[in-house]
Image (cartoon, protein in one colour):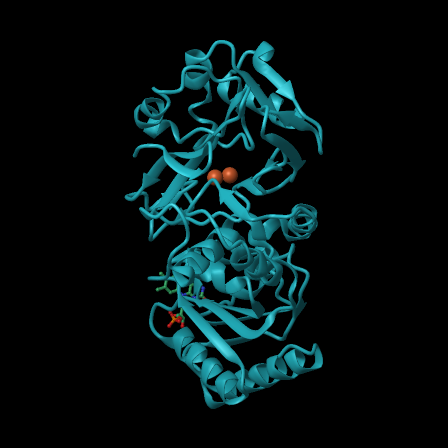
Length: 392
Ligand SMILES: Cc1cc2nc3c(=O)[nH]c(=O)nc-3n(C[C@H](O)[C@H](O)[C@H](O)COP(=O)(O)O)c2cc1C
Ligand SMILES: [Fe+2]
Ligand SMILES: [Fe+2]
C-alpha cells in the first residue's frame, strides 16, 4: 500500500491485513484487520503517529522512503500491532524523538528495548507544535492498555484514537463507506478489547467528546468522516442499560442439554424476550462476545463431563467473566449421568460478574415433564426480572 492523503498534509500509512483470522491469539477476525499509522507534515516539524505490525515491516518502511526528516514519532499505545516497527523507524531517523505517556515509556523499554534517551514523555493535556499544526495529547488509559493516549490535531479537528473506536475490518476504502459493516466490525472489536474496562471507557468517552471532532482516525479499520456513527454506538454500548435479551452459550453431546435449551428459548420467546443461542461446538466466540454487549441475562448450559462442565462451556464462562458485560442476571442448566458438577464449577467461574443468580435447572439423564416445568419457571422468572428492572 502507498501512503494515502487523508487531509492536507496528513497521510495514512500502514497495512491492510486481509488474511488475518485471529487476533491476540484469542479473537476470531472474519474480516481481517488493518494497522493504521498517520504522517503529519507541519510547516516546521514532521510527526508520525504509530507504526505497524512487525510482519509488515518492509511495506511500512517503504512508505517512509520519501520522508527525509522525521522529528517526532508519537506512540499512542505500546501493543506490538502499533509499536512493533518503532525500533526500525528510530534507526532510520536518529534525530527523531519518541513521544509517549510516562507509563508507555517503561513499557516500550521492556517490550521493544528502546533506549531511554530516545523518549520524550507527555502529560495529559500537553501540546506539541509542528508549526502550523498542533497536537494535543489526551491520556485515555485502558483503551486498550493502561499506558494508552489519544492525540487531537487542533487545526484539523482530527482525533487519532488508536485502538479506541477501532474496527477489525480489512477494506480498501480509506473512509467508512459501508456503515452497517463497519458498525458490526467495531462492535466485535469493542466487545473483546474495550468492554472489560467499561467504567473507565465511559470516562474516556466523555473526555474525548469535550473536543470538537470532525474526523476520527483510529488505528484499526476505516477512518470516520462522520464520527457520530461510532460515537453514538459507543455511548450505547458503554452506557445504555442492557436490552431485553438472553444470551445462551451451550453445548450438548447427546441432545439432553440441547432439549433443555430449546424449551428455554421457546418459552422466553413466548414471553416476548429476545434470545441469541450459541452452540459452542461451532460458534464464533467473537459473535458471542458481541451479543454480550447488550444482554440482560446469560444462561450457560452444559452437560457434566469427566467430573465438571464440558471444557467448551468452561471456556465460554471464563471468557464471559473476563469480558465483564453489563448483564444483570445469570442462570445455569444441564444434564448429567450420575453426579452433577456443572452448576458449582460454572458458578465459581463467573464470580466477577455483578449479577443475580436465578435458580439453575439440572436433570439426571434426559429432560422430563418436571424439567420442562422448571425451565418454564426459569423463563418466566427471567421475563419478570427484566420487567422489574425496566429492561425493554
Ligand atoms: C465423555 C463423557 C463423560 C461424562 N462424565 C460424566 C461425569 O463425570 N459425571 C456425570 O454425572 N455424567 C457424566 N457423563 C454423562 C453425561 O453427563 C450425561 O450423558 C448427560 O445426559 C449428557 O448430556 P447431553 O445429552 O446434553 O450431552 C459423561 C458423558 C460422557 C460422554
Ligand atoms: Fe491494543
Ligand atoms: Fe490495536
